Amino acid sequence: MAHDGWIEATGEGDAVVLRAGGEWRITAAAALDAKLGALRLPPARHVRLDLGGIEALDTAGAWLLLRLKRALAARGSDVTLENVASDLAPLLGQVEKGPEPAPPPPRQNLFLDGLAAVGSHTEAFLATAAGQLGFLGIVVSRLLRGVRQPNRIRLVPLVAHMQRTGVSALPIVGLLSFLVGLVTAFQGAQQLERFGAEVFVVDLLGIGFLREMGVLLAAIIVAGRTGSAFTAEIGAMQVNEEIDAMRTLGLDPIEILVLPRIFALVLTLPLLTFYADLMGILGGGALCWLTLNIPPPIFVSELHNAITTQTFWLGMVKAPFFAGTIALVGCREGMNVARTAESVGRHTTSSVVQSIFLVIVIDAIFSVIFAWLNL
Amino acid sequence: MLRVSGLATRAGGRVLHRNIDLELHRREVLGVVGASGTGKSVLLKTIVGLMPIESGTIEILGRDIGRMSEAEFARMEDRWGVMFQDGALFSSLTVAENIAVPIKERVAMPKTLLEEICALKIALVGLPADSGRKFPAALSGGMRKRAGLARAIALDPPLVFLDEPTAGLDPIAANEFDRLVLALKESLGLTVFLVTHDLDSLVAIADRIAVLVDGSIRIGTMEEMLNDPHPWIHAYFRGPRGRAALRAADR
Image (cartoon, rainbow over all chains, first blue to last red; front, side, top):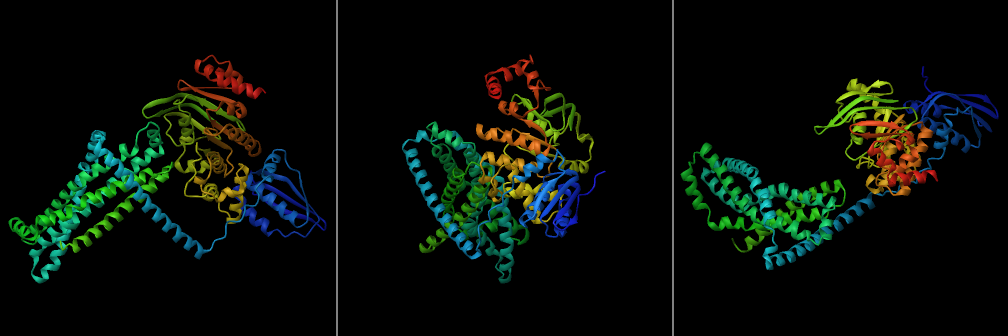
């Protein structure tokens, strides 16, 4: 039958005997630690630590015993271990060797650390911006070479990427645009109803979707769906050293991996935008018909009055810029992946955040330019 | 300590092991070798309960783990430690916190004592004292393996499974790791199930050798393996690398 670990002190004056016994295991370590803490020993020159009663010992138990021995020695006592069973000796010897006290952790100052964090984040932000510009430069130079030698453009990957970034995105882009159109029309109608001007919901929908929402929705969905996929795909190749292998084989990863993706997205995002415009207006139209008693013929004629071809083009012109940004950010983050799996995840997140951020910034810039031009 | 009888496993629809019998005695190091794809790691994972048993029994410390309820199995799991190939440290925790994970799960103990025990384990596996504060990503491959071993022995289990502890290490680090395993076996009284490809490691620390061939297993000492007529075993131990390892050990 196993006994819990125990320790007791006997003797007095200059010769104290500490007798330990029972099971000194990690499961009892907390209790033993408390017992050792409560142990009051008279200051004695000689302490004999009698381990004869110990039935089982593991490293935690051995550590407690040796810690006790060290504490006594630090008080100036002369400690000897007695009755050490032969099978315990190697363990005690091994534990005796370590550990050295760990060096104290570096001092922390919350204010300075905060300041340093702001500084390093700013630096990282600027470095990202510079890196992005540099990457844009590399891609443009490859692009020009591609234009001079069109036979270097790889058609099969281009089509494959168009399929994955465009055709496969149709259901989700369509569904979301339809729903957003529905909700926009509903909320708009609630407000316009108060002025008896429900019919202007059609203007709201037409202008809102064609100029802003269609392209933004498509771009944000694509950033989440395709930008992240670009980063993960290229990142996984980076982890697997495939990119390095390509370089040693004299192949240019930018030309093989990046250019087809950028081309594909620049070609498909405008198409997705058109589709999103259509589905959004369809969603709004459905709501108008079902709840506002605006039948489709009136909806269409009202739409004709509200929008012009220019309205359509003002939204559409942004799509290639958004597409280029998303593809560029996605590919660059993928190329920057370090050789660990977690780095792929980090860069994928960063790719999505950066590309949505940039899409909205670029959209704002377009708005300013259009306002200047009175469009 | 560990007894496997009539074990069959299947991975991805393919039969990997047909009939595995092996027995591991107290304080023994059993080296498990086999060609790639013979299921060394699958065998290890099956024994520690990560993969299902097709048929046969696995007894650890006299108890059949195949017939245990999940709760009983969870209670048994502190009786063995597993060191995975690259340490498999939790990357979001520091090395010391990694070692503390199994301890905190099982035992309530004051924070200072826990820190002391983690520092002790770090010293036991021969890592420098300041590595406890570091994150796994900041360690070299050899150090990560040592940290993985420290986590495996956090609760002083009697049985330790090592999956290719010397793979990917340079010869000096591999040699040091062998010596570390031997020293810990002596001092902590470990029984070791060692999956390896490393002949030097086998010669240095294995008491007996188990070879996985043809879905079955052959166990014996190094001498018995050297005299085994099976073509794969012959090629393995009598090939140029095997001879070199034996010559090095003789010297």
